[in-house]
Length: 177
Image (cartoon, rainbow, N blue to C red):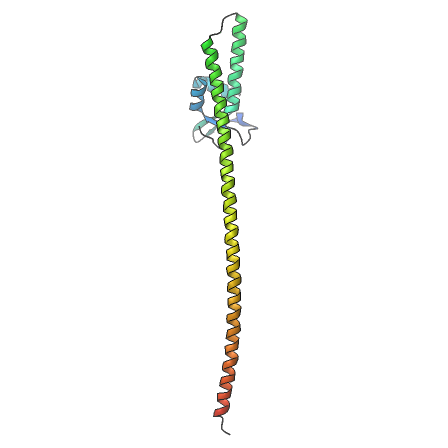
């Protein structure tokens, strides 16, 4: 199952879709629902199922797809009941298993998304802690280098004074009296 981001939405049936929507590729939805691709496309066109197109692939919103299937089954059951025909138990069982399969996919995708967010948060937290440690180490190194630089400056000043004094005495000794 693929979880696609909700950007670049090209189908107008996707208004008000939040970022936590679970998307199924059309082919996978066809397998799970047992419907023909043309029937699913009809449902998309009439607005019963939310969809989007990305990278030349059509993605179906699992929640709206499940709702559309349930409504079709309910209307089918009502019309079958109204006409007095007996429902085929295999049909009912297949419909229920399709709905349960879609539900399981949605739950698995939700759990997978939550797990991915937790892993990402842990990674970001560890990266932030690591960056803070590097920053602290760099700060200590800079303080050490500043102190060393200051000592070196003091030593250079001391050496300059020392040589001035030494050369001053030497020049005084060489001066004619």
